[in-house]
Image 1 (cartoon, rainbow, N blue to C red):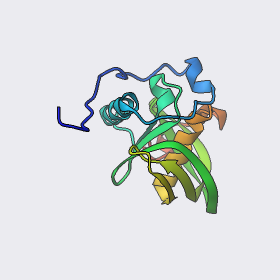
Image 2 (image 1 turned 120 degrees about the vertical axis):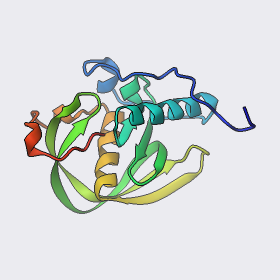
Image 3 (image 1 turned 90 degrees about the vertical axis):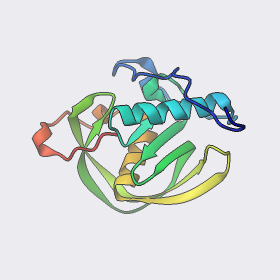
Length: 167
């Protein structure tokens, strides 16, 4: 393995059940970016892809760390993400969640543009504005980091009522 290259350790290989306690508690801030964290991120990318998702938060794999991965237009890992500003109007949409399976969706209104501060996997502090689906996905994943699930917003709706957005 080349210098600086971190492979999947296949430690984080499955999603936790919807009733797992880690999903209802606030995840811990990441203090250090080390190889173990990079393995977690790589495993999360793999698992998100396996389940055809667009986003995944560490609590969904049973790890209480403030880490999110997304793939809307490109792969992105966000460590300790914080929404620092919500901009624009809110728009309702049917959101799915890998935790509950593809067919279970809840209507949720969210701002369509947000500004977020986070560290990347190299430890560089960044501020970025996210729009549309990326903004929705990131808010959904940050909800996971705060112990909030889509079911905290309302009841499941029929699959014919919403778009297929699994985060």
